[in-house]
Length: 401
Image 1 (cartoon, helix red, strand yellow):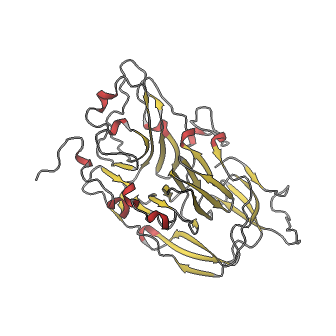
Image 2 (cartoon, one colour):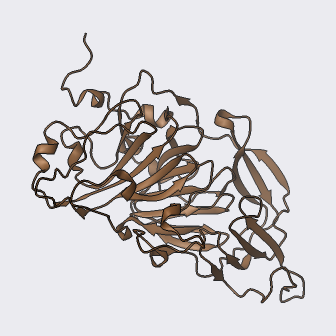
Image 3 (cartoon, helix red, strand yellow):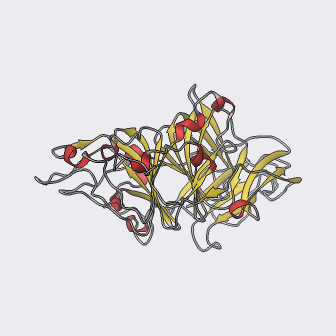
């Protein structure tokens, strides 16, 4: 995130002596992207951040995927994955279930009620959307209070843990990239400031404001990293002699931050606007978009719901999180549903939805969309919650018997 922040008291000059109260030096950690030629932050640790005393395998959840073949649109009911009381003993890291994935991104879902282990994703950034519930996200950069509608962007290799709060499950939709996740380049000046046409800006972002210091010894950190396992992903538990939350100060442009979907300013027009107006973030070979409550098209002959469309380069994933999505009425889709509309198949409103939308002035609907530029496959979670009749909902009939 190319927006400078400082937390704690940093020395006036980088890479100069900065001493603890006992006279010893704080340990600098420069955390930087793209071979230290892009955004970075400089963290000051009380202890040596590379010191470990053990390394053991972490057996990851099932990350195998099944091709969407024969090709068809899919409807996945994510709430079915956690429809009992199991969330009370589930954490937001090890309890994730893989719904969809490809070589660039994995989409997981979890309903959690207990504190996660310390966790670090060494493969890519994560954008975790909080569907409902609340939590305290504790990180080496500080803590963030998060709740319904928050996109939580966590840079690669950030040590953190999720601590749910309240009496309801923390329902989280985790988008795990194999790359970085950033605001779209077209929203930013060449120096990284949000431009006037951007649907959000720096004022809408929440970052850590003070250091988080925790004592402890022989502390385990669960690390997801590149390796020979399913999808080239492996897991290791590293044990540190002192707690990783020992950063007394940091500054820079790389850190976790939060953006709430309610702060997205929708872009509308006289006729229906294309999906890129809803974009909020981008990663390598995928984009993330927010569909929010908004006034709709105001041409006298406008049709407010989307036209049928074939995004020939993408698979489209919609996660329905609020309101009543006009184009999907009658399909069985509801809150907590995912629709997967793959490249190679035209998709759009349900029969009758276009006519029914004429004259509407406002849509009360909230959804998070991921478009990928490589085909998505189904994870074990996706296979476990599929509505088998969705593909035939436009025609009203299934395969010939």
